[in-house]
Length: 382
Image 1 (cartoon, one colour):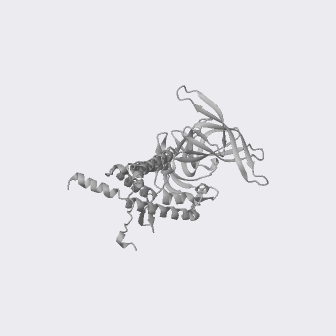
Image 2 (cartoon, rainbow, N blue to C red):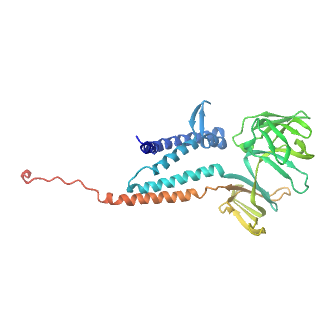
């Protein structure tokens, strides 16, 4: 058997429709099990375990394909179908399969590049920083400048036991001896201690903590840090005579534009304290890429009218009227999804492919031979 025949055989086997069918069955199982698991472990943990994983380990040692691996197999199955020999009547199916492939590509782009964060600001406040509620980061804050803090942040992917954190902005190092996604801090009046606690269903409600080995100008020592620690209790390190404050906080993202809350409005349902709608009037500050000049304009963000700007979509999430002399504040959900256009394009391609398939097979359906009626001979008549 020649190499071309061997490749064609493997291609046909990879394009077997049974593979697609079994993948769909397994995806339905993951959907049901993952949805039920949300009640017990929370949405975030359920998504990571069943929908954002390559493998699922049953009883901690039996591997089963996760959602991502199943979708990869589905992708190659559909891709192989495009290269198998088909008649001209299968052109519509090939177009529809191309649309499905684009849908899967868009899904993977979204899974690996999309971000969701929260922007909270008071009336009159100008900010370009959002907070990712489900992830943490370890920061070194240089407060030498009275007007601006210089922050070196290590994202959540670097926070694990045994990680050694270094950066060109400082000469020392941080070695993570213990990292807890949720802990209970306590103090004996001099030193802080952290005790591991079960993770909560809502990851944003966890209190992350870590025990660090710090190496700086003063040598090596061990410090304890946890989320929500006040600035006066935070440990520090000195590198080349510059003091850095060590902080553990929710992950921060920097937007390519700034928003200032001018005014807001909250409407409640009559006779209740339940919100009916929110609205925020904001001032947008951007920088012209060509001239470098600052551009400012106003926009209104409401529950049904998000702000779309520079690849980001800002949804109105919450608004509250200030109390005890505090100003009003607003909360926006900021989403960046590079692959958001793929579902629209792929849906149009799949619909067009099905239409082509119907048109190519319509003449055969209309001209389908009918079964001839049986003749009754004259001799058989009464």
